[in-house]
Amino acid sequence: MQPVATPDHVCASQLALELLRTSYYRARYYDPGTGKFLSEDPLEFGGSGPNFYVYVFNSAINLLDPTGLLPGQKYQSLKCAGWNAIRDINQTSKHRSPAWPHGREYGGWMYKNPDGTYSYTAPVPGGAAGVSTRDFRPIPRRAQIAGDYHTHGGYDPDFNGQGINPGQPGYKWRNDGNEVFSPDDMDSNETEGPNHSPVPGFLGTPQGTTEEYLPRPGHPRGGRVIVLTRNPCECQ
Image (cartoon, helix red, strand yellow):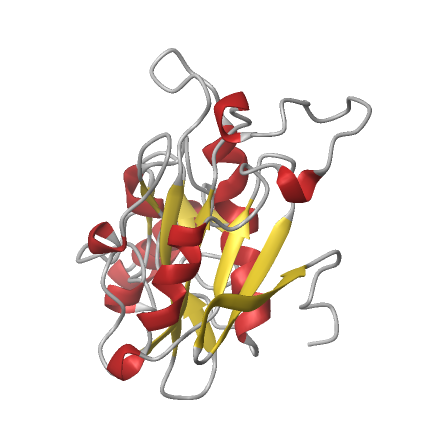
């Protein structure tokens, strides 16, 4: 006599087969056949918008989500979150195409979660010479803006006022507008926080550098720039 498969057995077998065809991203299972996750985003609206099942805003060519949480993954420090925000989008930002011969800028918000951790919103594309905070995706409810991040796209000689390209004798990256915070960048960080308070900014450059700008209250454009030469998340 052959055993009869009960509905419970059938469902269990189907689930096991489905899981074999998926990828486990630590937070959720991902189905490459449909391009969607099998469960809702635990970050809800802090992830890829109102659809809790999509993968990186349906933009897998431009964005990555190795854990099933990005954007919105929680980090113990703002610096660590900023580092990852830049790392996730800078390569895409530098990509050259007929429409964007020098790449294009991307940007988004850094925010503090109610539990004291830090995250960032998904990057939004800007133009060849800027991205507006007005276009940034909103932060989750009960979160608080803690800063912003943006990239400068690919190398554009028009922004390098010294007339010496990277790699040539006499080149100084601090004199290259591609590689530093612009005055407008600094001005934004002076007033973006709660009640127009100053907040840090993070920058990704064409040469792959990640920088942090720390405004100095009462001293417009007089803040401190820190070049992050190593991953600040390693000790967390």
